[in-house]
Image 1 (cartoon, rainbow, N blue to C red):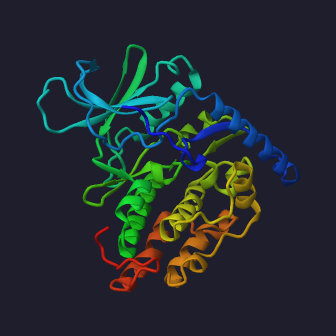
Image 2 (image 1 turned 120 degrees about the vertical axis):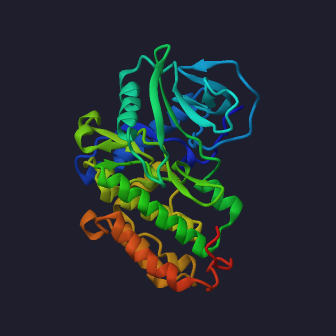
Image 3 (image 1 turned 30 degrees about the vertical axis):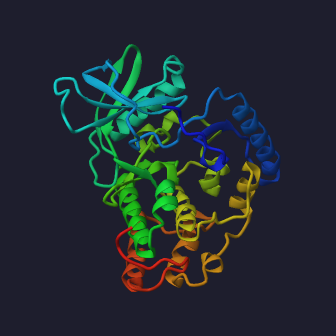
Length: 350
């Protein structure tokens, strides 16, 4: 299967580039350099990278290959950093329960930074069980390449689900509340995801949200893995303090959640921007577009939640994902049966 090519830079995978952002007067110069670096990187790319690696796709036929104790059935997705396979246990080749195996790219197997990120993802996911987080089954090494075996999510990523399913208002609220539950569980373990975006949130066929891709996540005791001076994440969803070189914490994830919720409920990003430098400038200095301005019929309580998440200062935002959930639940209860401001009827089913 050929990886899906993404044409909008916002949907491209996460990037790591060096940015010097010691003070605001130099930030615009740095952001221009960042944009130029990203353009050079994209032009050199041998092939596009699929950002949503864990969503099951149509089978391409069986492949007689073993990775550890797992038999490969077909390729689900392929990118420059990893390939994801549909697998079954080798001792149960006829099993109807399939799993996703993420195998580290052989091109990156010798790069210490890439291996460190992969090992960090393994350590973070080990023993982590939650309904709204993609679960890890086991991890290992195959011919010098690391791999992780995870539950296989039969469904779509959030961007695909929004475009194809056109969920109702209460369906979107239900998804949003599930995302806050996932973040709450992650943050309680001292983990900061650092790359919250639609491609890293999966939806099952029955509407269960699954937070995925912890390749950039950091945990309290693993903070030393992140190198000083790196801008890590997807610029369209990054918090101001992270763009300024600060250490991300759970409130940085909540800012990204604000960008995500604005996109979910209005169909638009909270800032008028189309380039990396414009997004960086907007996150730092611009006032977000009011969701109610885009969708006049949106409940004020929902708009207020989104705008509070998008506050520039971490101290002015919600401080925990549980606080966000507690603010969203009354909105969900109040809008049952009310027309969606974008034209859909409400209802719990997404």
